[in-house]
Amino acid sequence: MASPDETIRICIQMLQNIIDDSTIPRNIRRVADETRSVLQDDSKSIGLRAATAISMIDEISNDPNMPVHARTRIWELVSQLETVPLD
Image 1 (cartoon, one colour):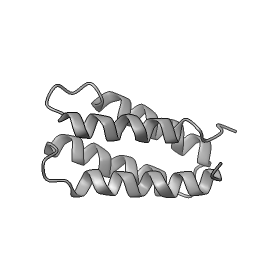
Image 2: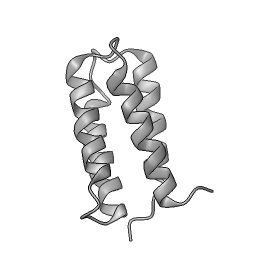
Image 3: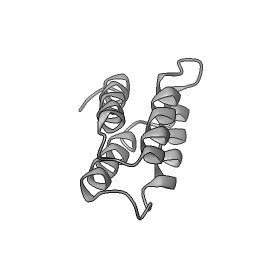
């Protein structure tokens, strides 16, 4: 199992892939970029960053304009973030 820091690094890369995908609507890519910034903020605990990111991503996960392949990536990202301990 990956360490929490490694999991966050993987999630940041997954978000970058979403941001770079021009087939994904702009509003979803914007939230992905904001979420990436939250995950990179070392001033907060790793658990708080993961929980905040899950909350942000959850808001866009039900967007009707989201392509199926993007929705799958979002669910995979949330699954990864849920493995990060909150303490």
